[in-house]
Image (tube, rainbow, N blue to C red; front, side, top):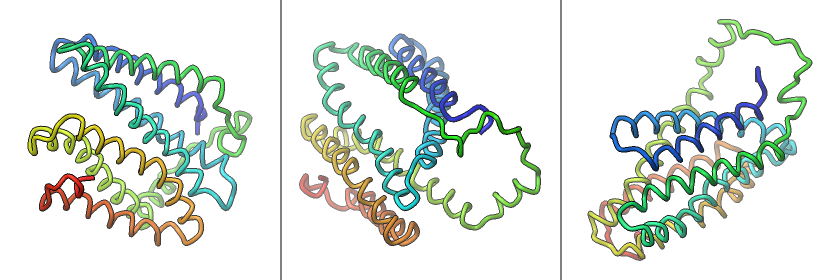
Length: 239
């Protein structure tokens, strides 16, 4: 709120893009570890203000749908990566992962350029003419003692575990179950496609029935998706 969402988003995207390009040239684990930390910091700097900026421009009765539409960018990127990365790895051989990081980093920087042009602040979310007001310790106390905020924080904490699980799930399919790369790529592709489509649907349902009422079945679906591969290894069920 102090500098405006657009400045933070663009600066964070530049950090992410440069970090991804740098990963294509690393030769040390600790260097890669440090660069990934920077990429993670940049990612956080994109998601948080982007959510606030999107919510500021959302119609009053379509906040959930708007946020769902905003979130489809993540799934859309995964769909593109599901096609693009295997091609790079196949054509470039053992060093293909380096080329993949460089290409993705350059793409992130190109998208950053589009963001410079397309992103617009809204006066309600960032008012340059308004005097800066420092948050008091009492205000921070109200935030951290609010049971709704605490519950949402725990929910997103668990959702973060699912994101990590999804990353290692691909390795589990390939190495643990020995599935062909093509099958694993197809599973990942359809996961991203359904996420792309259903994010808007869940957001629209939350506008209609309420956030809490819709978030509960979403979490149940996530729990089921995590537990099912432990007990069933049939390819149709993995889809």
